[in-house]
Figure 1 (tube, rainbow, N blue to C red):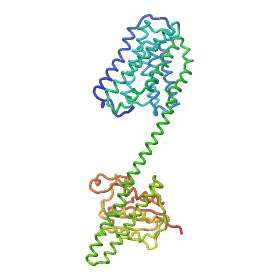
Figure 2: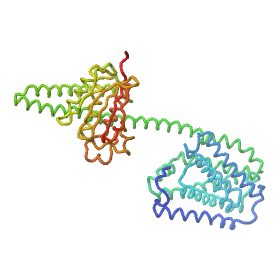
Figure 3: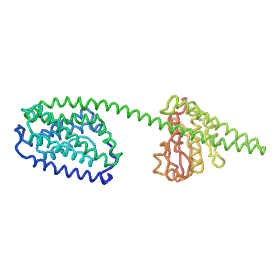
Figure 4: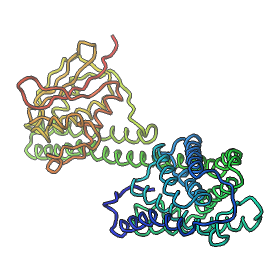
Length: 489
C-alpha cells in the first residue's frame, strides 16, 4: 500500500468519505445492538467482557505468529487481513457495540507491533471492519431472530446462516474499501486497487473470515473449545497465510535484487558515457587546439613551435587511445570498478608534459626531482593530471604550481595548486562525489561532475588516493594531493 499522501492531501471526496464511514461506524453498532435486543435461541457464551478479552488475545496471537513466521510486519501487510476474522467473530458472539472495543484494540496492537499504514487510512480501515461486522451481525437476527448456538441442534441451517453472514461481511467490506480506492488519489491506492481486483486476495480474505466464523461456532458451543481451536488456527495461519507469504517474500527478494542490478547497470552505463565524454573530451580539445597552433606555425615557418605543438597532439592522442582501452577493459572485465597495472614511473617528464599541454598563460610551474618515481599506471597518472589541471583552468584561471615530493611515510605526493576562489566549505565533502556540482557554478561552467570522481577512482585503483588539502595559511585557492606508493628499494 503506497503512502504518498496524508489526510490533508487527499481529495475532499475521500476526506468526506472517511468522516462519513467513521461516524457510521460509531453510531450503527449501537443502533443495531438496540434493534436486536431481545430473547433469541438459547446459547452458552462467556461473559461479554471475557469474550472480548479472549478475542483480543487471539488477535494478538495471530499478529505475533505473523511477525514470527513472516520476519516482521514491516515486510508484509498480510496479517492485516486476518483482523477481519476477529471483527467477524466479535459480530457473531457479542452485541454489535463490542465491535467498537475489539476492533480498535486489535488494530492498535498490530500497529504497535510494526504494521505500518498511514494513520488516517488505519482509522478508515478499522471503521470499514466495524461496519462490515455490523452488517454481518444482522443476518442471524433476520433469519433466526437472534445469535444461535451454532453447534447445537441447528445443523446445516446454522452453517448456511454462518456462510450467508460471511458473504454479507465480505461484500460490505469490499464495497467500503472500493470506495476508498476510487475516491482517493489513484497512485496512493494502487496497491489497494490491485488487491480488490485479485481473485487470490478475495479467496484469502474469505478464508480468514471463515476461520473467524468457525471460531464463533466453537465458541458458542462452549468457551473452552476455543483452546482446542487455537492449534487449528495456527495450522491454518501457516497454510493459508504464511507459506504463500514466504513464497511471495522470496519472489519479492528476487525482484528487488533484479531491480538493484538493473539500477546498477543503468548507473554504470551513465557513468561510462560520462567518462567517455569527459576523458576523451579534454585531450581532444588539446588535440584540436594544438593542431591549429602547429598549422599556423608551419605557415609562418616556425618549425620549432610546430614540433612542440605536434608533440602535445601526439601525447593527447595517445591518452585518448589509453582511455578507450581502459573503458573497454572496464566493461569487459570489471564493470563494478576500475583496475590498474601500476609500474615504477618517472614523474618529472609526465608532470612537464601535463603542464605543457595546457594553453598559453595557464601552464603551472613544475617542481619535481628528476629521479623521483612512483608506482602508477602512466596513462592513469596522465588522466588524473589532465583532470586536475583542467579543473584549475575552468574554475581558477589555471593551476599555479605542479610539484611532486617524497612524503615522510615513504610515499610520493603530487600536488596541484591554484590561486582561485577555492572550494566552498559546504561543498568540500562532496567534491569527489559522482556528478556533484556546486550550484553557484553548475550553470556557468561546463562539465558533468565526473572529473574528480574518476580521478580519485584511478588513484585508488593504483593503491593511492586523491584528497583535497588545505591551502597554505593566508593564501586563497585549492590544493589537491595525489598520494602514490613509492617503488620498493
